[in-house]
Length: 214
Image 1 (tube, one colour):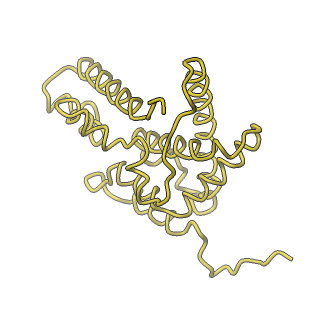
Image 2: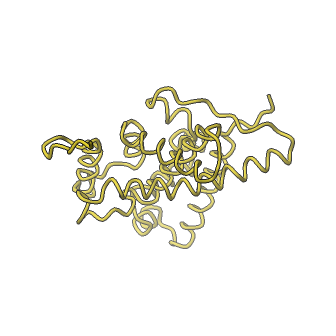
């Protein structure tokens, strides 16, 4: 017999849902940086459990063993952070958020599972061609260590340094027209500089993976 949930009993995603609603109501000048949002997700047990479940289901459908699970989870969580950097609200419909939140979150994670799986397949194929062992990544024993063990955007920005770091930090918080006015440069020039800096950031993140032959 399935136990009916008490309507007064808090749902497991309540804490995460409430935080997302608070972020949406914050005025622009008090908007939370996407890295802080990512860290909140990374420390939320419900989100981590949904990543685990969705990755297991996706790998099961693909006929893959749990040997891929750790890599899959890390890829999905990294991609989730990248999505937050582009769209901090992840395109959620706030008019129906109370009813759709769990399904919406599962939809986002499942979509990223597809991208993560494709990346892993390419990586395995590339390493096999080069005669290298499977990619190595440490297990995440503690969710609080997640941002240190995955390709951490904040870490990569610090490694990038200089004008590129400053420009990308401004870009994450201000529109192009405002930055162009502050920097006194044409928007077209600014967009090209931002694109070059983002490409450098991606290379740093890509090089973060341990490709050493053991």
